[in-house]
Length: 254
Image (cartoon, rainbow, N blue to C red; front, side, top):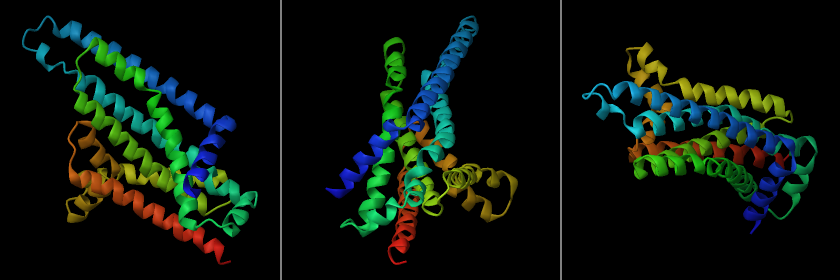
């Protein structure tokens, strides 16, 4: 199948270049630092609250460790994903290999989906590499498995949204740096839209807050899976993939 062939090619390209390995190592180092810091903070708070018989029940693993860890992971991916997606179309355009791909017996939809799945496969590898953190929590503590699963699903959906936006910006330029800057700017805008709800008293603030990724991530990170949050992320991804498809398809008719 053409989609899987393109996806395998893109996934292999990440491990064939320094960018993929640097991103993977940086992701593990930063998440490891945050995880160790939160463990230390949790132990300190537990020791202090052990002297208060009315406060020990508030030290919940899901609240003090799981939710903050995955929230920080989302912020890290906000910075990394534009760097991972900047080359998807920009490099092909610069090297003129996109023209060969468009003239081959492969549809535009297969090209877009193949590149998207390849990038998502690499993001999944990065998330799977954090499995030892959750295994450590399950071994030493008693976190809610449902919250852990929900947190991984929320971060994966967040990755899907980041990759979809990065693909669109990469399709508009031959410069990977330009794709990186514009992609990060768009993602940052969608990330902070929730602040508008607190800064305005009009109904527009609620709509802007709903359009923010952060609003929907907070609910999923708590283990609260609502259909509106899933619909938001899936619609967000579908829209940007459709826009990327239209942009790439325009090159076919030049």
